[in-house]
Length: 112
Length: 112
Image 1 (cartoon, chains in turn blue, green):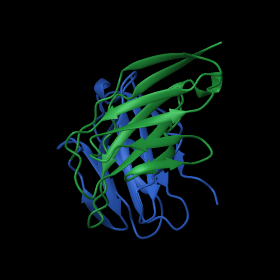
Image 2: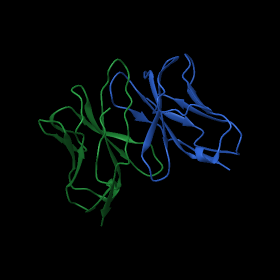
Image 3: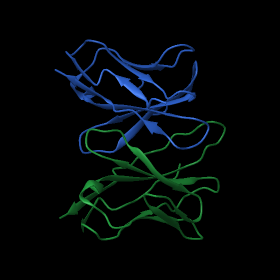
């Protein structure tokens, strides 16, 4: 059973471009979570999704950020018109119906 | 959601037992306590989870007093590879809403 997969592992964008981060949960997991981590800081919850539904997006910035988890395919975290402050590591986690979350390796976004 | 407080950093020599205590005074009745480990440039990894008393697995032990307002992660005979950040989280799995908040964690440095 493959673990949580994220791609790309590294992403470089110029200010104003769009960033798309993908997350494939573990097989059988229907819950996906996205977190952001700045250097030397802890993870900050962004959004929690189940298939085709956003359950909790209280950690998502109100503008430019969106997330989806379609019926087929990976979960996508989309950042429009990126700014330098968006540079961070973005982690995705998945879980079955229990509290244990399995994290992916993360995507490191660098905004030039 | 219950907030947690844990030491920012700890140092330990190889072979010693390390105890990291986390305070969670506002823990709710149906909250679980979960600990994660994170190495640099990797996603967090689940270590152990408990509700009350003591839980032990092949990696660590978790001690939870009767009032559940704190918990202690115990790592027996640490090695250099245990150098990592350890996060204490408190949360419940109510109606599918499961957003675990990671603080800054405790940075454990194991010294040879």
